[in-house]
Length: 149
Image 1 (cartoon, rainbow, N blue to C red):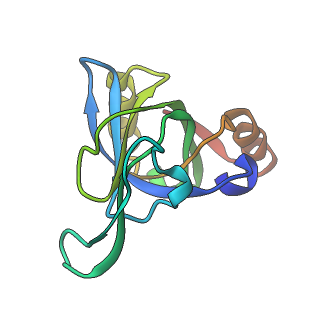
Image 2: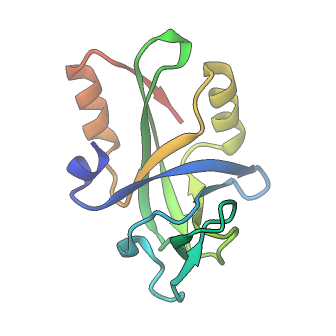
């Protein structure tokens, strides 16, 4: 869905850290982001899975740029569309694998409250494009409630 709407590659990542002091969030996965998402100022490496110790994964920080995060959720026993946005920042790789530090458009304290209060899952799709309005229009067509991150 994100790849189609954003007209570019997307990938799924865990939301693993929220930092209220600078309003950032860390999105990470073991190394499955496409190379097109690598920061061109960093060196990408091939690596092994951090837990399974098996090849082949990428290790690089995500490139800076405007992002949309989204997922189809089954929280609260119904299908809903979770939508958020922000700016991926140029930052050192915070963990092994593929990861990035993003400044979210909403305060991370509010994002955390929404995640906890709505019982949301921790995996989110990411695309380098602002497709929030397209996602909201799609949700309206599909009669899905939208949960804003």
